[in-house]
Length: 303
View (spheres, one colour):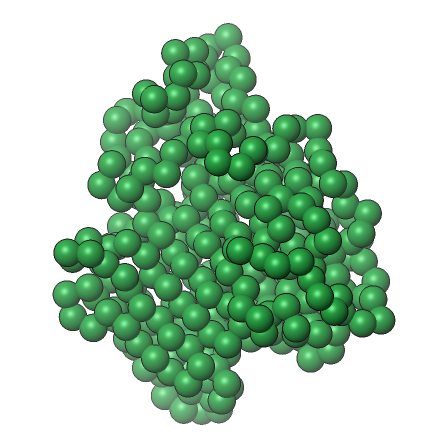
């Protein structure tokens, strides 16, 4: 779908949002509770989840062959899932004084996070490591980052600026070989300033902020072939503007550049195309259903 034309004024009172998430293999619940799946187009590619003025949230997607949890009754017939997970998350923030703030979180080192601050102009860069055993939080101007933990065990990395709260949660899954692997899930919650900003956000998740109702997209059905295998294929069809390729970040994973980028927008940007379908041929996930559309459950990091 082509980008839509901007309305004369932004919605004055968008529906309330409790937050969105991208998790598992890879299931998206957007800011209006619309549900769809994303496989990604290539191993190791990075995609834009949220793009707003001065904020970009990207995630790397990696392909993997894994198995269903034994608690899922489909595991009797479905032996292998050729799917994908998010392996790392990257956040770029422009602070209130124009400095750039970069946050990288890798679940393979869940008790630490890498931060880099680049001062406006020709100022020096500052490198910061958060660690649950040392400094677990960092503040700079309107940005607050904290690595949350209990008894030294990482629970989540949280980043808040004036308009958004981003939470990156470490998780795990098992390959068909039984090897335990790490992944991340990402939760995105808008603050009041996000809804009142005249520049509409975008990205796989961000574009849904001003939707009037839930827009569902394609989900994978996980019906096995004769060998007991299934390959995911959903790419958000019906729920995202354009195609999944339009959200790919090329080069630096912290880059803010893609087709619908809003990071440097200084004037009102277009809202999501009104012609997007409200449902897709695939049945969307129902609220509270754990295994309807996925091979990866919400395992804790040490599951």
